[in-house]
Image 1: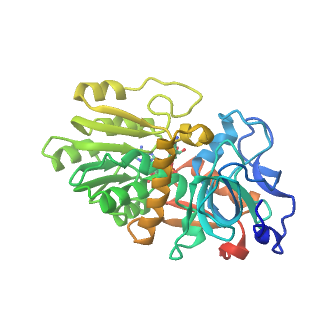
Image 2: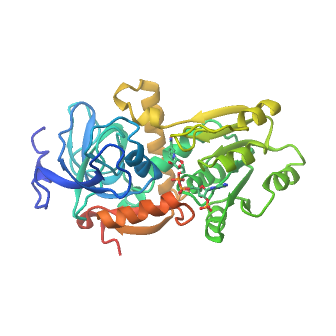
Image 3: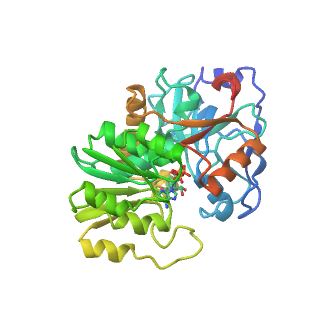
Length: 375
Ligand SMILES: NC(=O)c1ccc[n+]([C@@H]2O[C@H](COP(=O)([O-])OP(=O)(O)OC[C@H]3O[C@@H](n4cnc5c(N)ncnc54)[C@H](OP(=O)(O)O)[C@@H]3O)[C@@H](O)[C@H]2O)c1
């Protein structure tokens, strides 16, 4: 630690040495998560230690608790989206200083930043996944961005061309609403089509810039898209729903020679524990469409081994998240803000797991001193 950088650590604060995080204490324990005691970590190499103000919930967190698929040894603290203040920096973490307000993603194979007491925590992030927070963005809104924004960015950046017709199902979801905003407002797609299963999610997809939004429970979306595109189909689909039903339906909407981009493990693997037959590959082959699988886990789970190109790509994503949020092009929709307690986090993750109950993002106020009250 360099001289002068202890300042934040020395601020009067309830955390000394260790703190109570929220996570799993047993291999594949699943929900409900528990309070787990973790040390305030020391940053090495390019790591940045962040005093966490706010975070948000992602489905990934309950999936890690259920399946422990990165092979961690519990206890494991969760809460990978981070917004807060730099408390310390490793020797190779240049360009950020103690006291800077930042937004970051923690390594998925490290500990996250939720606090069981609702009174603050510390977490580490790599320098290339840490960016300065613009003052126009609250800690709460900033913390809604990293994982979902980067997921959409990884699927769409350099792929959506101005004027393209794009179909993004689930435009009221955490990833979906940001993907719709990026396609419509930042990448200049000509027509953005989306879907939702509830009036609120359909409305959020519309507010996010989608030109046509269908109800996936009622409408024949393939027929609607065929009509909108004079029978051609869309240039690309970005499907982040993790729904086998959605995968089979959206694959049928891609034009001949178009692209079908899926987030995560992809068709036939959505539950991670069982493989099921999926018609997607055959549907795409018939159309000569390209199947692209975007799985960010391979980036996040081995961040120390990423090459310069991958690091630069993710850093660019984090920079653009801040730039576009500051410009109002991308506006994270936080539908619920909760205190960082075991009970509130379990309830929020339970809603994400059940599906259909969450709109946009659930934010977590980890440190009310920095992040303001949840209510
Ligand atoms: N591996 C990776 O790189 C990675 C990264 C980030 C996220 N993910 C995964 O991606 C998934 C989405 O994450 P999220 O944060 O966006 O979750 P979320 O907020 O729960 O959103 C899920 C969305 O899917 C929609 N949906 C569900 N079934 C559908 C169907 N049959 N047709 C069309 N839309 C449907 C929902 O719409 P309604 O609410 O309107 O029903 C909702 O908008 C999660 O499974 C997450 O774990 C993976």
